[in-house]
Image 1 (cartoon, one colour):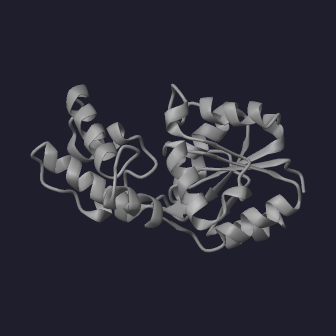
Image 2 (tube, one colour; image 1 turned 45 degrees about the horizontal axis):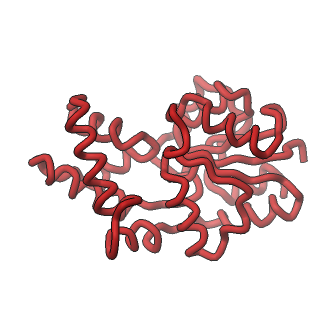
Amino acid sequence: MKYQGVFFDFDYTLGDSTPAIAEGYRLGFAALGLDPPTVDDVRTTIGLTLADGYSLLTGDHDPERQKMFYRTFQDTVGVKAQGEGRTLMIEGTTLFPGAVELLQALKGRGVRTAIVSTKPGETIRRIFEYQGQLELLDLVVGGDQVFHSKPHPEGLQMALERLRLGSEQVLFCGDTVIDAATAQAGGCEFCAVLNGTTKAPAFERFPSVHIAQDLVDLKNWIAV
C-alpha cells in the first residue's frame, strides 16, 4: 500500500449527525425569529462552519447574528449542551456502513489514521468513544483547534506534523469540494466519498485519485 496515512473528514464521510445538527439549526433559527429550515436544507450546510451554514440558508452575513446562531447551536446540541441535546449529538450520530471495518483494516496494516473536520474535536472523540472505536484513530483535529477553517490546510498540516508524515505519504478522504480543495492546498492526494449531498461531477475540477461510492468501495480501492 502506497500510503502511510489516511486522513478523513467526519460529517458525511465517516458519520452522520444530521438529526442533532438539524435540531441545532431549528433552535438557532428560532432564537433569531426565523422560520426553521428543512432537514434537506440543513443537509446542504454540513461540512461548512456554522456561520457559513447560517449565511448560506438565510443570506444574512451579519457577524452578530452569525455569533448568536453559533452560540445557540453550541448551547443546545453542541459542545456546551447538557442533557438531551448533547446526548442527541453524541449518541444519535451514526457511523456509516464500512467505517469501522475500513479503520480497523488501516490500523491492522500500520497506516496512521486521523480526522480533520470542522466539527469540534471533543465531539468527534466522544462519538467514537461512545461507539467503542476511539482506539481506531491516531489523531483528531477539530475545527475548534485551528484558526483557519477548511479549505485552508491548517488542520491538515497540523495532522501531518503531529503524526510526522509528509503530504506525499497521505491520502485525504472527504465528501465535499471543500475537502478536495483542502487536500489540494495541503499537497495530499484526495479521494472523494459520495456519502453526502455532493455528487461526483462536482469533483471534476479537482485532482482526485478515486471517487468512492461509499466506504466499502473506498476500502476495496485502497486494498486493505
